[in-house]
Image 1 (tube, one colour):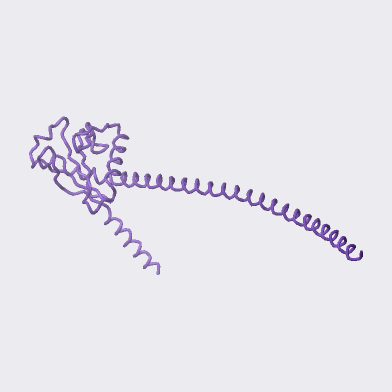
Image 2 (cartoon, rainbow, N blue to C red; image 1 turned 135 degrees about the vertical axis):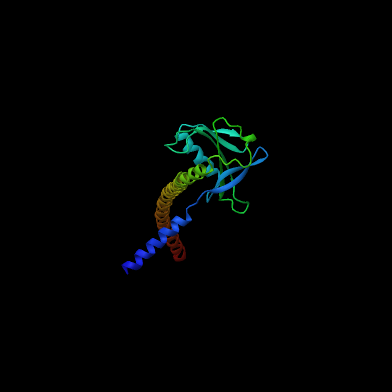
Length: 216
């Protein structure tokens, strides 16, 4: 039994590793020319991926610049130990119209102050390093997506709690109205009993008068 559990655990762990997104070589259009780029497909919407990248780079102290469809981070290092700085050009778009919750991330690694528009299509500068950078970016995107999901869930909980408080307050108000109606109902019953006694008294008086008239 223990051996079976161990084999199952290894299989599940292996499946998880196999499911990990891995960057490949791709091409992306930049200024009407296709450039070599690292490509990574992720199971998250493009806005999540874009914000995760922006947040990751901001933590590194690098500001984002927009160049058409690209988010550019100049003077970035591809790793902590990289002695060189580079300009990183990211483009994120939907994987397809059908797969709206999935994205493609393209990364072109540019030389410092390089004019990418004149780069040759065959130039694959630091493509391997770019793929490694994208692979190492996956946990940050996953963490950002999880954080946003938690935030959304907290908002749903807050909304549900607010609705519950409103219903509880309504219950208190309705219970007060019920108690008020019950008090009025009890008062009405007492008044009916009193009025019934008064009615019986008046009827008795009438009957007595009628009896005397018959005797005369």
